[in-house]
Image 1 (cartoon, helix red, strand yellow):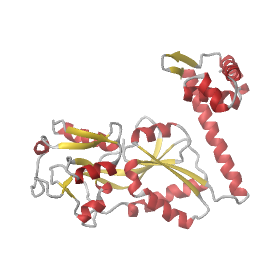
Image 2 (tube, rainbow, N blue to C red):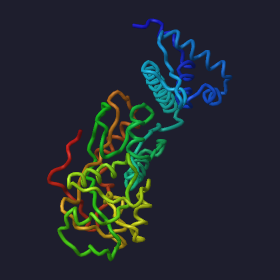
Image 3 (cartoon, rainbow, N blue to C red):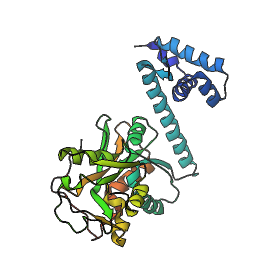
Image 4 (cartoon, rainbow, N blue to C red):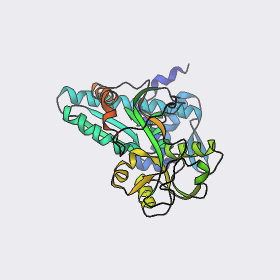
Length: 321
């Protein structure tokens, strides 16, 4: 054991984290409002305490070594602990009902705000921060400690998580009203081989599920455009630029209004699930725990309804990995 590690200071860890984030001592100095020699000294002292190299210079800038990554994880835990302590103190003196930091994949924005609004009515003094990004970015955020929990459909298997089911999440193929296949029934995946797909970007959960569906059918979809927004995909399909594999929760309104239709394709809808997940070693303060419990108990009622008013079901739901 490196006994000198107890002499590490938070200022040294913050300097290391800033260099890692900015890729250079110069960027770290600007962020911390210090001189470059001051930042270099902090890193040098930290490295001496650990007895291991913490940074590696590359053509793309400074990156963390394995030892540096361990210290960076320590920095994140301390930052999260400080934030939690600040929230606790604010709650003690009555300045706030608590702070909650939630992450959600972009598709979840069609129901998570409604759930937050309902919770806020029950806990009006609670300050809730919602970050909406794609699955890859949520996965990275879960590696740290800033998020209390996240709402997503495909929990990463390489992070130890507590996973709680919210409800079913159907995925369909949509087309514009009047599409040539609108009245066709029992289509096979091969019938879509000549169609142009509007698709989410690589790294999104929807893109992953679409590729899985076509891979199982031994087909490769013809991608016309990659888009980072479900809203843009919907508008592109309505305009007649192609069709799309998409979460039914993102198009519930357009389907009800008749601006979009779903194609009757064998194997669809594919129904996955929504989950609330948090790191096993993330300690939640009472407000965050109450919000998590609220979502587990009531989250299903905020899921968008299909045009018929009933959720699609899958006789073989995907297992949690």
